[in-house]
Length: 135
Image 1 (cartoon, rainbow, N blue to C red):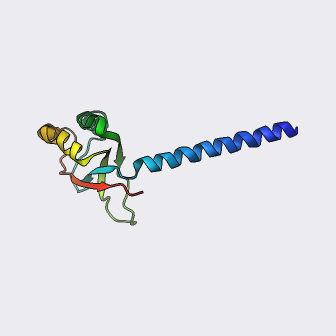
Image 2 (spheres, rainbow, N blue to C red):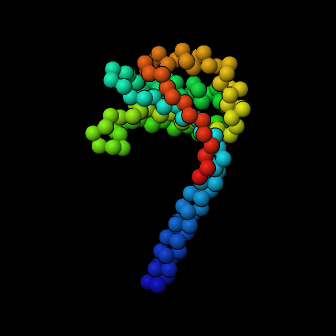
Image 3 (cartoon, rainbow, N blue to C red):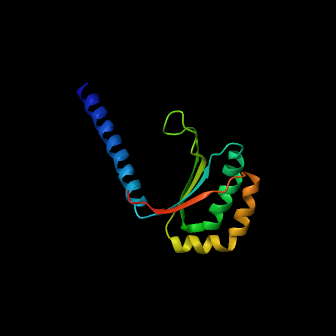
């Protein structure tokens, strides 16, 4: 009985320690990355095709970024943070990259193709913010 109890505590402790280690490593890796947020403001009568964005547009842009890309995320807007206020953004696509200059070099020759693809999923002009991950 004592052996089973000891093994259970050991397994629990090992699992918690491993999970904590993974979280710490993830946070350490992301600090210093460049984050490119492409935000699509909500407005009455504007449209956004999330399926196309997720399956076609974002993978296309990610392909242009190559090894400089660490990861990308896609967010679908649900509500404002303030009750009874309009949704601020319909969607936000975010690229986490290693180098801003490599990002700019990869996007520049493909800018026209990226912009031309907008018509396939939205009638909104995006707002783009480039920032550095500090934590």
